[in-house]
Image (cartoon, rainbow, N blue to C red):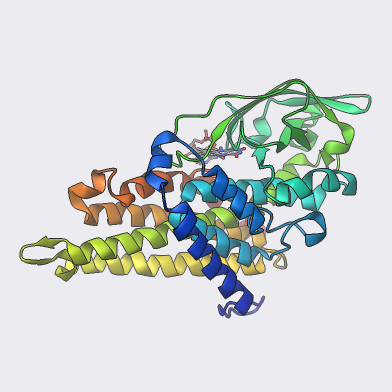
Length: 386
Ligand SMILES: Cc1cc2nc3c(=O)[nH]c(=O)nc-3n(C[C@H](O)[C@H](O)[C@H](O)COP(=O)(O)OP(=O)(O)OC[C@H]3O[C@@H](n4cnc5c(N)ncnc54)[C@H](O)[C@@H]3O)c2cc1C
């Protein structure tokens, strides 16, 4: 566990037990059929239901609202172990937990929390987060979706793009301009349900990676959302979205660490087996150097991630720590997958080898929940604000 002044990375007994349990579950339940699900773009629905029963789909929600009431570090340990085997399942888990349930648990009214959190936290339903639009990604303040008050409801119009769990999720935290004349201060956050009139989800995107996860557009056409589904105060939406991302980036960092871990394992195993020039390629020093760099960067990425997670709810600079972890872990994991594939030679280019899928899956970690460039801007902003 980490303290504000120093770092002690010994995990508690409960954290070690959960980590081992999730690793066993991922190996036994998620690994079988992995390649086939990737080919057929199919989420492991039954296994996700089991994860819900294990409390893995509502880790950040308090127990009284049906969650597991876990701390962010324990959550990161679980995401890492799921991502080591199935990054698609990890992003599904991380999105419903951290960008949907977390802001509802933090900013939603007691009535709204009681309505939506128990079914989300139990995994009976999945959630999502609608910030990105076709013409606004990094520049979230430029969104075009609007919300107009009409008596007891808000009426939302607009399109959200690239939304994880679109089409399979029930509840979405959606950002919209409730006062377009107020710029970024006129954005509000709403919890929108798929059964609300005027809500529709588009067809799943054809992605290069994370093919077993579902990503698509949300269409809001006069979508009528009860006023009680506003999160926090009117006009606080962008603040809520940024606070949510400051927290949720820990999950993406953990996802990257899990993928990195697996890439290293695959590279070591292949280097031991593959013989060229009469010896296993692991005997060639150039290959050893690559493995050593991958291992060192993995340790650094994991340390940054655990550190940021352990301090996330009690450090003034928690957002910067999460951005540093996400930036470093995602870029290091991309390097690791590139190098691991290189060590596999031509076989690495074959879908028969796991590294080919990891190489595709890891790519998006430097893009979603804020690109690497946006993380650098966040980090610099914290430094320069002092
Ligand atoms: C698989 C997947 C799942 C996703 N899930 C979700 C989701 O659930 N919910 C959601 O809301 N969004 C989601 N997204 C969207 C994702 O968060 C955005 O793609 C991301 O924020 C980048 O936005 P953009 O794609 O519009 O790129 P742009 O903002 O158009 O950026 C393009 C390039 O320009 C760079 N750039 C932009 N502005 C600057 C600047 N000021 N300085 C330097 N460089 C800059 C960027 O870093 C990037 O390299 C998902 C995306 C993917 C691919």
